[in-house]
Length: 128
Image 1: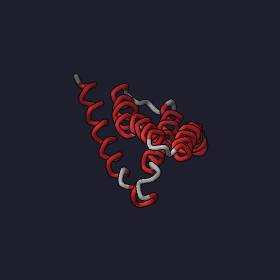
Image 2: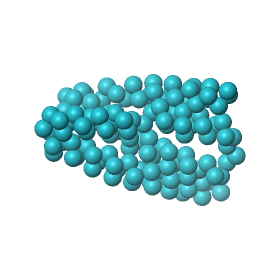
Image 3: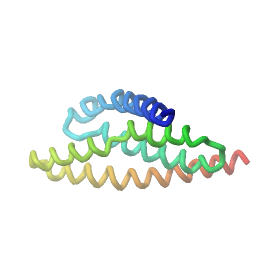
Image 4: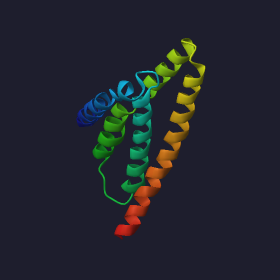
């Protein structure tokens, strides 16, 4: 039962963070390009890479791992929103924007997982 609470609490935090960042689309692209989803996917990828790269160095309880990785980051990242936005762009005939969204989100997210992982490892090495 504690696991469910831990995941739900983390999910609430991640979801609120996602909501706060969600308004960026209209500030930066007038809603034409899904900027907030791109930012969330990239920063979430960096965060998961960074935390995963550093977690082996510290004793982190299974519940804390659930809280962070499934709760916060699961609530924060937005792959389903990304998929729906890409679908809508294709449906609306915005093929270049849709393909740009797909390419940028996927390539940058993977790169940021690597970047986060190696940033954590470099930081740990500096602290040792």
